[in-house]
Amino acid sequence: MNRVEKFSRSISLFWLALIFAVMWCLGCLGGGGGGSEFTGIVSPNNSGGGDSPEKGLLSFGLATPSATGVFKQENTVIIPVPYGTNLSALVATFTVSFGAIVRVGSVMQMVGETSNDFSHPVTYVVTTPGLSRKEFTVIVRPGKLRKYFLASEEVLWNYAPTGMNVITGLPFTEEESVFTGNGNGFIGSTYKKALFFEYMDDSFNVRKTIPPEWKHLGFLGPVIRAVVGDRIEVHYKNMGSRVYSVHPHGVLYSKSSEGSPYNDGTGPDDKMDDIVQPGGTYTYTWDVPERSGPSQMDGSSILWWYHSHVNEPKDGNSGQLGPIIVTAPGMERSDTDLRPKDVDREFVQCFWITNENDSWYIQDNIDRFAAGNANSDKVAFVESNMMHNINGFVYGNSPLENMTMKKGEHVRWYMAAFGNEIDLHTPHWHGNTIVWAGMRMDMIELLPMSMKTADMAPDNPGIWLEHCHVNDHIMAGMSTRYQVLP
Ligand SMILES: [Cu+2]
Image 1 (tube, protein in one colour):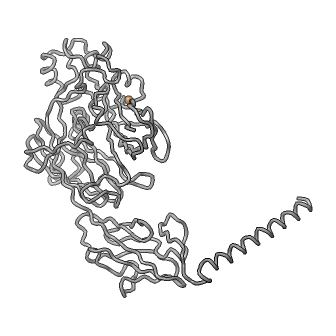
Image 2 (cartoon, rainbow, N blue to C red):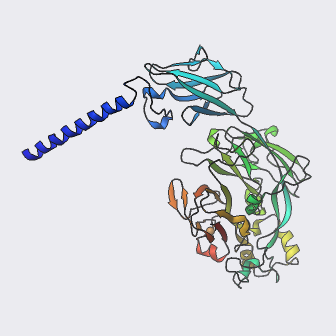
Image 3 (cartoon, helix red, strand yellow):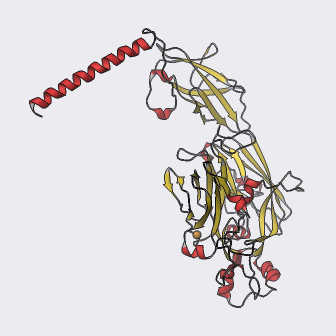
């Protein structure tokens, strides 16, 4: 740097300092004649950085049951606690800015010692040295009991109810008829299966009506929903002709609600859930603690799965599976509507090559749909029963009205795959993009029992193709359509 440059730089710094000084003075005058009233923004969220005096309350939780508070807005803390927690005397653990004093009413609060009745919101008053008092409202949200009445039932399921290729708008070609053609020792597109159905109560007399927004589930079981902190009770009845169970992913269960028989060292009391006999009932109890809900990189809800796990591969191929959705605490629309507040529309999709050869009902299906005699070409017969489906539909047979959304909505796609080593799926949306794990894409990768939640803000109206991008799977019918209305 030469002399001239040094000189011009020092001149610049001088003017810069002068401008800041003037701005500071103006700021004092504008602030009410140099009064001491603090007008800064309090943002107690821990992710906001280090301790600063204006924050007051830095973190808030409970000692027993151990729970972490979530800051909402600037001064409200919501803490989910498990279903059944007695709220009358809970002890809080919190951190505050250096030197701060915390009171509830007139009672000084000691970290990990002072108890309060949280059956109503509690106001914590935090006073920091040289700062006016700040109030924080703490709401302890006890988990709710969510009861579901679930049954396994044997029904007929048609993978292609329109009898045509809806993606091309044409009759099935010879190649496509491999999977859908009936006759000559081939089963066709309709199979006997054991699917999950939801009932109104434990009399299991009246099935619950499937609301329009969930008709796209096809042959999947009903959605079981909960918010973090809740307890799920699945009152299960096996209305099928063979043994089944209900095994969940992600939620917290004891050995008596795992729904899976294996050498786990437990006694008879913990094995009642493992296998439910035809006509038998069992009540599964699953808790939804923090570790079962969305984590830092997730959105406001995530997908889990339930399925029969007596003979997992055969039970699955027979049709025994359905989704679980867990919403973050405070993000549910209401106590009874657990859809996330920030989501307008939800879709659950399972990409799967259902192997009907490995279903418990393959002989029933040969008897019923192939006059008791499978085609003598074993390879061709086996291939004809590999149903490359999305939610039980092939070649776009999922009704478009069930796959419709509006431009500008926040659409959440809960995506899963199931099955075998050939179930490597790459769902791809034409026309719009998604965000998954913070990354922009227009497809995602799925392996058997992958569960991924992607968000779409459709900006491109039209009827669009959505398909697995594996070439062989495209040819075999793993495609559907979705519609974006303007
Ligand atoms: Cu695929």
